[in-house]
Length: 156
Length: 287
Image 1: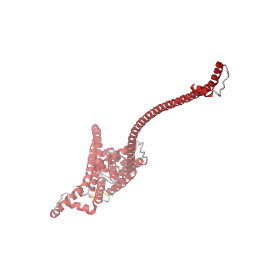
Image 2 (image 1 turned 120 degrees about the vertical axis):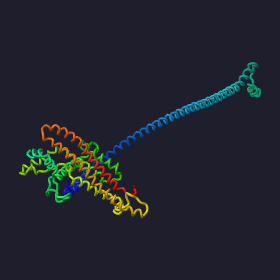
Image 3 (image 1 turned 180 degrees about the vertical axis):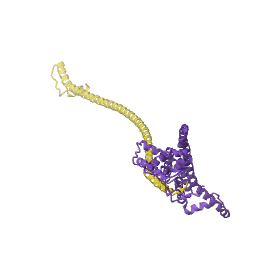
Image 4 (image 1 turned 180 degrees about the horizontal axis):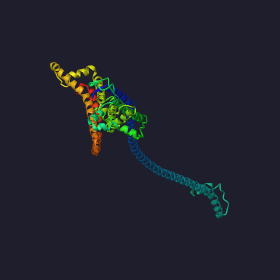
């Protein structure tokens, strides 16, 4: 039970051992454990982030779908509107065309009637002359009765 | 074994023989005799330090953060445990406190664990080797447990004492540290009261500071020496064949109980070291 020079030896051994342990074991292990801790924390954070992103993506998909639905409904409505417009337009055009055709036909009829009347008128004179000649039994000078004939023709 | 029979027949000599160190420079003359070196203490503690260092190096070289092997797992467990203690007690610890604490803890456990080796095994081997080389086995001494030696425990305690002073100066400066001796633990307000309390304060602080390493060293030494002595006393029961079962039973019980003492004393030494260093790093304004 004495203090001897061994004391100094033990102190030196202790100092060297502390220095050695610090370098070869303590720091590498602590670093490794800290790195692992950080990686685990990062991984958990990434998983959390991923879940959040998934949620956001879902929301975005739902929004997109809603938008698409709205748009398609709009497009359909527009198309229907356009279709009815086209039908209306076609109706209008058809009516117009029909009116035009009718007018043209009427004009033609009018023309035909006039022409027929003209033809009749021109023939009335000769018919009247021929009729009169038959009745009278003699030739009639058309020029002499031109005034009466014209009057007759105009009455037709 | 020729050195065995007479020892048992003479219990006093047996115990004294086991309590004598293998030394260079003869027997220590006084309480402190720096001309003597206890070789056995140095050899065993250096071998144990070497074993610790070897495994530490092995672990440190093969660190795999993702797939730790059994050795790394064990080392991580100890490192994490010690680091937790340091973090709890001394949150502002610098990078040296952890390695100091783990070295104390593991090295003291290893040295204490030498107590579990049968008390006659290593001395018997040494006596046999000594006899082979023509020496007298009766004078072959070997005390296998370094911590049953005051040199080891005070070597560690004084190292801690030096560290306490270092951390004191580091946190407060030399002037601040010396000032602490005069103005604590009794804090006075007025100048007169300060002067009056300076001497009591100095005495109190001196006692407090010196008690730290002394209690550290003596606690470990006392526990381990008592344990060793009890193992020797139990071993004495081998004087008769009829007492052998008693020796086996008592020895087993004491060895099992001693496992607790071994780890507990190492833990207490480490814990108190952290506490002392933490206290040393507090400035007086923290109180």
